[in-house]
Amino acid sequence: MARWLKFLIAIALGIAAGMLYGWVVSPVEYVDTTPDSLREDYKADFVLMVAEAYQAEDDLGWAARRLGILGDLEPTQIVAQAVAFALKNGYSPADLVLMQKLAEDIQSWNPSWEAPIP
Image (tube, rainbow, N blue to C red):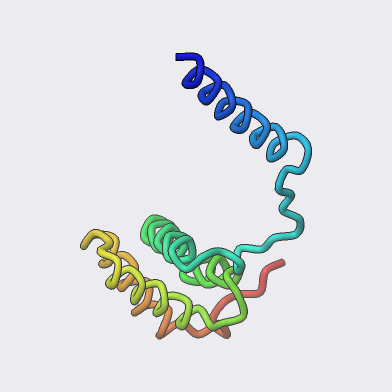
């Protein structure tokens, strides 16, 4: 019984030391990270959130601006990549409809129609 107790104490001390090191001594610090550094699944979720906001607001210019923070690609390409990811990974049909509606509308969007931001 003493061997098992020593083993469990050693495991608990190892976990505690690892947590202390990771949270206190050398925690992860994210500095100047941008949304374009997100993984593909998070980018697809972001595009879905933009599609939901677009459905509520019906403002394609704001949707395009929100998509613009995901990188240097055109909004049409960003949405197309997100839709492809969503199709491949089994997003719900309602989510796919929202994203595809945004994709269709963003393809016909012309930024010159927008009024400049004051």
